[in-house]
Amino acid sequence: MSSSSGLGYKTKPLPWRPLAVNSGRIAMKWMGSIGAGIFSAIMLLAVGSAQEPEKTVWQAWEHQKREAQDRVCGVPEAILKRQVLARVRPPAIEEAISIALEAARTEAASLIDGKFHTGRRVCVPDDYKTIQGALDEAKPGDVIVVKPGTYFELIVMKDGIKLVSDGSDGGEDMAPVEGAWLQLPRRALRTIIDGSRAMPSNRGMIDFNTGVGRHTIVDGFTVQNFPKQNHHIPGHAHAVNARGASPVITNCYVRDNGSTGIGSHVAFRDQEKRMSERDFRWANVSHTAEGIIYHNIVRENVGLGIGCNHLSAPFVLGNEVFLNSDAELGDEPSPGVGIQHGAAPRIVGNIIHDNPAGGILSKTGEPEGAHPIDRATSPTLVKNVVFENGKGRPGISARGSGSEDAPVRFVGNFIYDAGAVGIGLSEGAVGVIEDNLISGSGGPGIEVSHAAALRLNGNRVCGANGPGVLISNDAKVFEMVSNVADGNRGPRFMLRGATILLPGG
Image 1 (cartoon, rainbow, N blue to C red):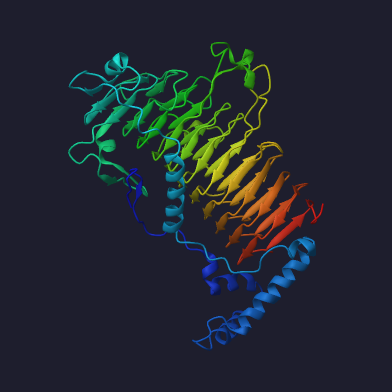
Image 2 (cartoon, rainbow, N blue to C red):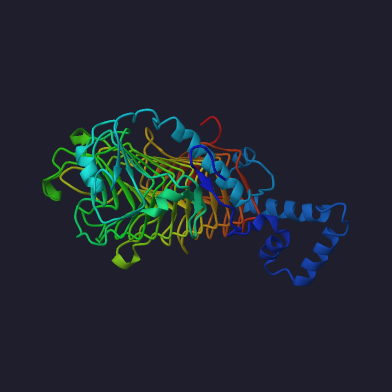
């Protein structure tokens, strides 16, 4: 698929098989000690008529199983009656991706100004030998076009400049990327910024002056081979480094870098002080970070694919993030997308898969500086497609994030084959979980543990290796309505040492 905005993806074989659509396998998991002969007899009765694929015997079995589970699940009858009895049939992953990318495209269209750059147009290397040479002379509104080739530079973007790869000679045609669902303009794959000749520094391969805004655009480059550095240590840089900057980063292929692929942080007034003396409170922010990270492929970086840190609030839209791993660093491994230290990004329509340490993780972050950060980490995640992100790892989770005034929001996401819980709130997190689809998780489909769900509504869960929804360990759910759980290896809903408020309080 391609569109006038340049967003596209290609069809790939399904990497998952939804358990809920295979009735025989579900039943066999649940039969337990019941002999295979009884199972066979039931199945023969159930399929006795080709004209009635769901026979009464099968329906009775499902009904009895559900009744037995509901009696022991601990959830009050008044709450159970507010949920929905139905089959869960997950959409094909192609359909989920199409929904996600359309959501991202719609949001990006309202944020990116395509009419600002009407100034001088120059070419690298025709007019300037280097990209940085052209940037140094550019004025707001100018466009710098970079011809195909490999540029061994670390560049710093100025405000109001558009840096774009050359789209002539078929450069605007969408091209497949190995292992990816998304496609990129061909110009992005043939115009390369390479860091293999650089030394590690606190500046990225693509960096931005503090204070630049959304009229600063980087469009259509491969960014690769940034030198290795430990992204867990303060002062590190990212391959694309938006610190105290709010640019547009689009159509880029960020791959094989020695740190986080794309990172967003605010800048503070005391940026040059030692970490122990720094003030990371909101009042000390000198420049915000509210950029637009749209339709990029971010893969195989030694760190996060995309990181949102220190009070930043970027729009992360329609990207594909996969195979990013920092296991070699020996610290707690990082997921495909990470959010911490008071960040509040809006993350819409991304494809997150095959990151060994999990899909999207929001957390408080370790204490830093002389004062605690005074804002909750509170991302909004909408219509992302997240699948197969590491054995024993969650699809989407929040640890200690959110507050009643600024909750974590997980809305309308598609999670397939999570290695652990599909969606989780834990360690004091406060969140809203609504209208998500979770299929085939290695643990419960949704788990709220020692956390608060302000709303837990309209979710669909199937094929979980545990309860569909588990609420435990002093958790509190304020509203729970219209959830569907079907074909899971545990009760539809389970309440264990926790509270669900009854209708009316």
